Image (cartoon, rainbow, N blue to C red; front, side, top):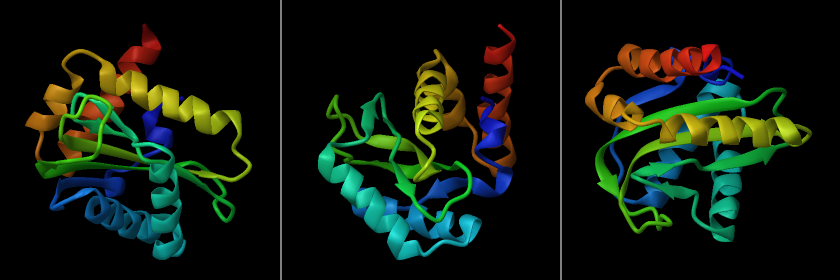
Length: 155
């Protein structure tokens, strides 16, 4: 699965301003609503419900909030680079500055888990987070995310 199947340049937020986890999720829900045509509140509530189960902050300044929505027809992603890191209650207690939001149809099953695993693997690649932190526009961030996906799949 290529990341280009999940995100487009339009789904990248190069400089998200948020003072905390809830605000970051709210901003991402708003962006996702514009991309999917779904209700922003429904997306936000789904993300909050998932966070109540345990933080999606996976460590090293990275969070992968995710959820399933019945009205989606395919998996959607939104990537954001935060202007300043925020507390995300991450597993390693480090603040988060890179967030990859993943939304899947209720019926996605294994595809949802495969997409989550793909994103987690990609973001753990040595040097990738550094490149993402150094890129400051939509096009560059998209190229880093999808270029790495292509290179990894070829290997």
